[in-house]
Length: 495
Image 1 (cartoon, rainbow, N blue to C red):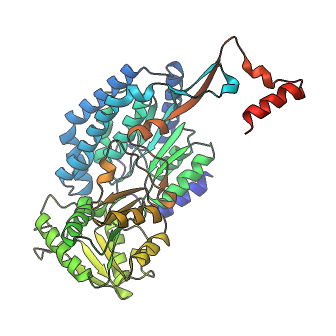
Image 2: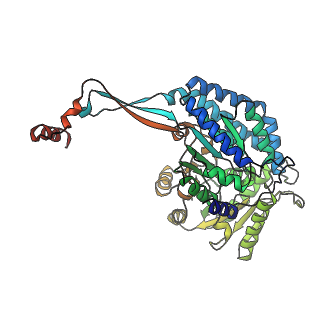
Image 3: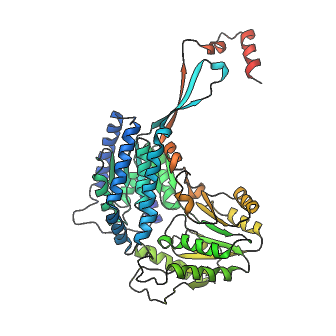
């Protein structure tokens, strides 16, 4: 099993660009993983039901540490990307994390409260309730694209639910990993929260650890291998994957609104976002108009690119070359590609990749087969709205769907006929920032939910408790079976 997982992960993700440090940072990390896991299991056994006040104290301490380290975190992510917009880090990572923690602090007491449930008359007098019990030790596997948010929001959810946690950081973000490790060490002992680093071998060992729950965020390809490894221990998983999230522009859409909002969602983090719009569906004949408005919107946001700190670079050379090769594949197969370069700059010596709009794309091209995860936007035309809905339905269910229309009847039609992890209408990305809504994929784009109350429920055991006193009406169904007595019960309750 270990060999199969290693081979699968190696094939599904790019090789590390981060060399080991002189201290051999990754040496023995697998042994450390196993040791800390046992420490956390023992610590949880000694304190299996943390009080609300204890959870709130830890959440507030985490928030304080995040705010204290926010500049160091932003700088670290910038170093890992070579250029990562500080404001994007503040908005998409720091602010999102702080707001999520605030929401959990506000609601955790209510979420923890046992909920009373109905008792069938046959079993009265009795009492039923559901008690939310922590699971134990949670594993969290973090991708490289939003390493702060995707480490700390699941961690905060684990703490809110009363669990302990271990976090496997990406090998592609060594500076951020060190900043997160430093931050967490100020707040938690390792038998509460621990950070694990390492490459494929450590990821494999992490996936095979018998967690009480495992949260993985990453590609669909790697997610399949992680799930297979977790199945060995019957470890429940939450998979936050990706896929090809469509932006569907309806015939009645305002193209200025659509172009600007799609541009923002696609340009944030240079498109390296799991819920970034992956392609645009637009009525035939309106594509040129949309592209012109998209170009104007992008030029307002990013008048220059090369030395503009607002425009993020591609994370590493492997990812950069992947995107370039996919553009070359599309062009060789007949696509028309336009580069958005407002200042006509040369990007040699950088990993800055300007947006590329792709027209006349076909299913034979890689860009319409694989999640793009970068600043490439295919524009696909349709002749009828039903044709557009069929196009979406014929493909894997995406993590997000973006509809641009102010027609409520048409909106309902789309919501009924399509499946997606989440939907934003007349916007992109923003559904993920709503603290009171679940976030999660469907099918190839993932399984399970977290964020808000759904996150608390995911990382808790909803334990059914039935209480009976001295009076036992249930004896009416005990043997020996008497036709008269049981016949009366059947008449009352089988109808």
